Length: 423
Image 1: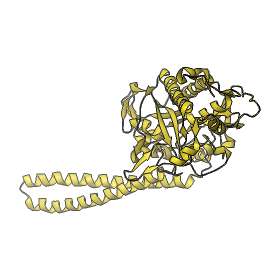
Image 2: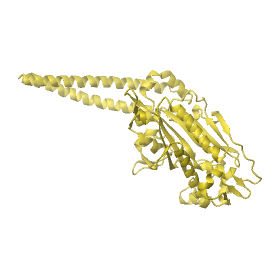
Image 3: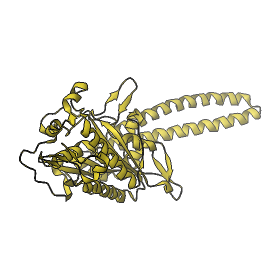
Image 4: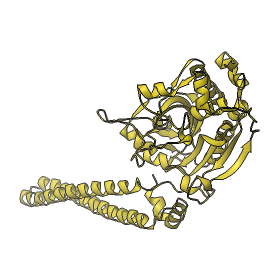
């Protein structure tokens, strides 16, 4: 959530920045400033009323001590009126704050200056590419056909048990899935991230804290009886560890990693682009999160990007990195880099990771602050990245490593799988 003082002091910058997201924010920014003016006016009136009430109360005490009971009783009636006025003003102030916050919840983060303008994913900028795209043999198959051929993922069984988008991993498919999770976690902990096992459901405050609520796209699974939400990513419980926390500057930076299943109510669509593992309602992901000093967060973002690079280099998968344009940027992000792996059998790029800097946007919602070296409380910066999302990494491995004799296992994963080929 953007801070009101930032909006007031940088009105033109906010409007110009949100224009990169194809949002005409002039009206809503004016509404925020006007509401804040009203809030400040009501707050000032309330403060004056309380101050007057306190002053009269002291005067009443002095009058009673001086034996001037009649004057004291006359003033007591005045304090009663002031207390009633204070009550009304306080209710009005709370309503105005709620109205202001509801408006602020609708405003996305202001894009970093590096974010290109654009409307759709076609306008994203490719900033890096690495790896040779393999030449497959005649008759090479997409991963959903390979899964069926080698009996390692059963999409029909998942559909029977739950519905579309909930695959069942079997035998070596399940073992490969587990191997990837362990490998990703090992890589992250070796890089200095502390591993956490996190809840798979969160409360409403956690959803608001990281920006998944209000649920503008209807992607959250809601457990209505308990008002809890299935997590769409480990970002939500992981970042909420720090909700309402005041850190010391010496505590920074903080890096954590965790594996969780993820749940997303994707909009219904059909075709090859959502077949198999390409788009799921439940999938596994290993996440990395950072809490950083504002002056060091973009250096940390570059470090996270390089970390994900090393994983893909070890897996020997062809990949590219995109800098997302304003129209494709997530609601809470100031700058995002997407990683895509090339699926040779499908002849397309598949997104496997997003690495983002949210600057103070989440921290403001979370009230995540640190005490700087001059003793002043300051909002931290939060960052997160997939390291990595499993479905499309698995799809890339199955398709790019297939041979006529079976699916070879990347060398780096063999110690984790205990086998070198699926056949």
